[in-house]
Length: 483
Ligand code: NAD
Image (cartoon, rainbow, N blue to C red):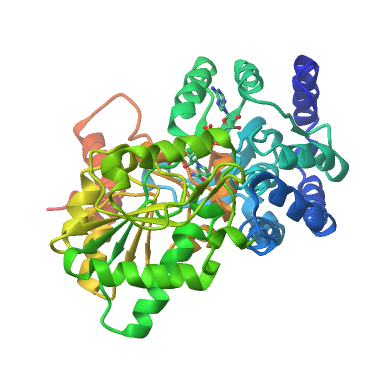
């Protein structure tokens, strides 16, 4: 749908929310089931659109978009009533006699922005949370994946309540126009640069915002002593770099940290695995995605155009502009001040940075903005503990990369420059809900220690209550003073 009638669209959405029908479990279930049905019935079409927009193989599309969404929908459907239920909480003695509970309530009309790299997955994953929590929603898919955007615009209204869930297609001007409206929540997936625009617009209406951003996710490779472990680690590492959209992924590995003495062996292992995954000429395979468009192709080309960076290429480096293809490329120690090491790469280049000791990776990471994810391949438990306690990032994964995205019992989100707010599974429900505090007091008893006229006795009473000193409280109540 288009922007032309945005005011009427907003009114229709608000009316749907005011009608309270989106609050019922029945409505929420019907929408979640609708999404599930769409994924089942339109699977082939989704494969086709993802191929068209970004050259994604159907297996990758299923693993990272349809499969992940199906799992999230099944989880939401099986937990919905539990998530919706109010949760009793313990209340302190100072409020006696009282009971307390947290009642989740939907936020209202929410706006979701998504990106082009997972154009179906990242448009619908937050929508699952928004619907499960009982909101009405507008999704603005990325204009850079036009086939996927028009797929959503065409099919979502056929499967979901189209007075409560809208897809609004368009580019920057559409996004800017949408941001002029007053929303009850904005969920933004994208770059830190655009996040500034989103937050400024949200500030005008005090709209709460979730920012799912990116950054440079490091992988640390502690040279494992077992050959088998090493090979498994390298396979996971190659998948974590090139296996998702050919490096165009927010949680994809940006650069690799290794000990200097192991660097050449690690690079050989990487090269072998790349060959094993993509053959002798990766361009011929359909197992690797294309660069999304010419602008991004040129952006990536510029990153390695710098002669000092170009000189550091030890594998790959072939670029085919006509087919928007860039080969998996490894660079050894490009200058740390070069753009490839100071901006998010979001493409198929892997800088390998050598360190004297693998423990130096902690300081290397700490001296840079907090990443969305840190990956560490190691069996050293002390090192694992140090990574957890001495670095800060959205997530830490040991001995794999990417897989954390599929674990919806863990929150997904960033910290610092990589964003804020959490989603996936129950965290999505919470992100789109307000946990309303409800306190019920009874008239059974009324203690006067909280009211004037004040006295020393009341101070003692309050002190005992705030310190959970139940014996002192009891003694005070029966008129005795503890020695
Ligand atoms: P982007 O910021 O360019 O675009 C994201 C969305 O914002 C799109 O819908 C786009 O239309 C809209 N937009 C663009 N310019 C705008 C403007 N001036 N005003 C308002 N809206 C505007 O991001 P992208 O290029 O689509 O995606 C790449 C970035 O997203 C990377 O930085 C990547 O790390 C990040 N990302 C993060 C996650 C995550 O889950 N944390 C997932 C995927 C991508």
